[in-house]
Length: 139
Image (cartoon, rainbow, N blue to C red; front, side):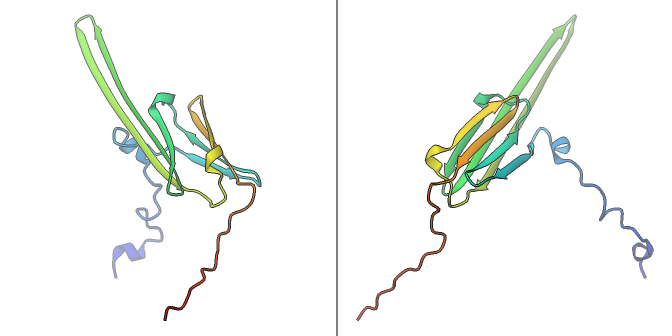
């Protein structure tokens, strides 16, 4: 019998996961995304603190919403013979599959106080999700 089998609690298995945005802050960040759906629209809100509008790119391709954000920052200080240069880089990319009934021609987006808000209206008539394909018999 192994010692770990005698222990009632496996601290490694049940440990609180390390927050990746702190551990690998210079490599990537993982902002929260909230999705709400109603009969008329789907609203997606993405928290992008510290980002500016020019840092964000949003597109729709192949039935998916693609959100990209990249921030580069350089701070230089020179005070009384002390010089420091700090650089940081954050990048984020998220692809969200869209429901079939989203009207992609009328999607709207806004960015205010570090929150990207996307409104995806639903098409007037629901699109068919299942369709029978007629198959002909060739001689």
